[in-house]
Length: 128
Image (tube, rainbow, N blue to C red; front, side, top):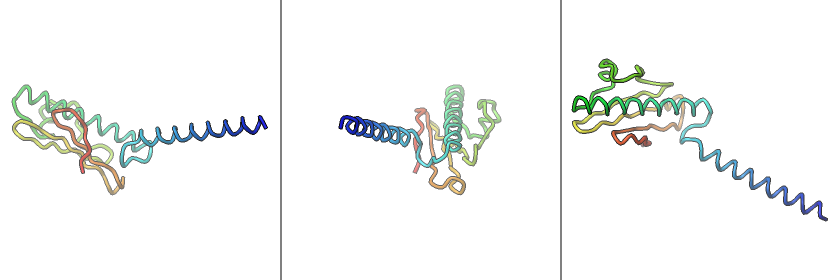
């Protein structure tokens, strides 16, 4: 009888551990990402967003205005020369006192993917 109780206890611990693993794994994936390659691509996209936004902030502080992505590249203010990554394209929308950098995801390649944006607050947000 004691062996059955130990086995039942072990089974309960295994089920709880499995549920915790599943919960943590699902929480760590970004929306619209289903493979490790897509996760790596998304990390690169978010890093590019941060780099573009930082270049805009620096340029804005030095010149008092914000400029387009192509102007950031040609002025040397942006260290990366990319305007896209793995199907995601980048767009900079400027106004006199602020900017938004927006990604456009490749829905044909990655159905259900999510667009992201960043502004002078340096917070990456999902875009509907």
